[in-house]
Image 1 (tube, chains in turn orange, yellow):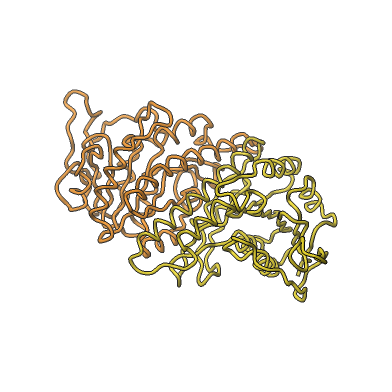
Image 2 (image 1 turned 45 degrees about the vertical axis):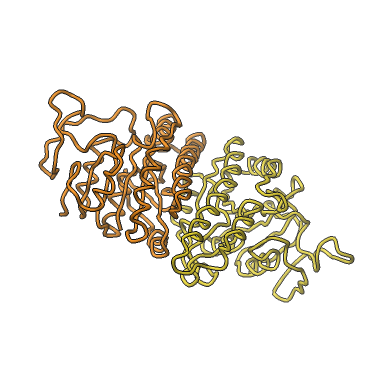
Length: 254
Length: 254
């Protein structure tokens, strides 16, 4: 099983609320179409400009105090916004004759102080067996200490990669991989292989409430499998990573 | 915790594809608004004219044979149709300032030959604790023997009622309760109390793929708690049932 993360920054324009990059998702589907059903896949997507602005608006990450009905309503609104984005992605896959199937992350995960302490993967495992392509997403989540929180797509990637022994995990980004500083800055250099000691001076992304690149690397470091960080805007890159060609930034198997 | 089933026949017109009876759901929300948060609720809704025509079109109940990608695609389309109906219901509750929260049934249940053999209720239990009103729905489901099947809202009601020790379960229908034959037929008589020996000559509903009234009664008989079958089209009925007034058809606690 190969795990693929559709980063929020490639499926939508983070600066335009509720924007959706249909073309990028259609290209991903076209590439997977050539590899399914020989390979099996689980997809996870980020919040992009659907989930993040809602999560910020309602202060979901700040947790819940007793009697905050308005915050509970915001929690539900944020989930619905994510379902709206998820439906657009599912729809593109179904049109490409790929049986993508929505799994609501908030229906199966529980966190405690931001860490996943409970994840119910039975349906996902059975779904793979019958040939479905489960599609999860960064979502709201019930947190045992804080009441509520956000669960990032990256945290879901790490959890599933280890619990289900993924063959590899691929992060589709809007840049060529992991850089040693803000990509685009003078002297920014693409890192070929990252490991525990790689120096990362990368700052937090603009409106990514789940912590951006630093968090992505932190989650990747937890994974037992090989991890690829590649540019998801370039057609063909995903196929190269799946076939094991040298591309983007790689974290080796532990 | 009180379990409430919004029957497919009251939230939509089964003869009109993708029709939605907004007014009925708004009335339910208005009644619950007076009782929340003193009482806690779990809602389950049926497929109505969203889920049933899709399930029939794709033959979901017939199960899956190897390599049937088209059927897997239909499975996912049917779930998306249910999410569309669910979103309409959630939206009405949120507007009424009730924190309804969508739980995808197909993300947490597994059946085997039509019986629920696995149900992951941890998120639902935690959701109740923080004040959310979980809203589940009849849905597609992965079946261990058949590959795929439909899970009815009624089966979900029975499972949750027993696993979570519901105070009572209330079925909102488009008639006054359970009749001894097709309601509207000559001599049809409303039954006050049903039990194991009640003679039911009721036929199957028109396009209800989950087996209609007979199945509803079968599921109610499994429940340890008190069960009400009431007319959900009449304002005030739900409040009466919640308060324990004599109304509709009752199945007593075992």
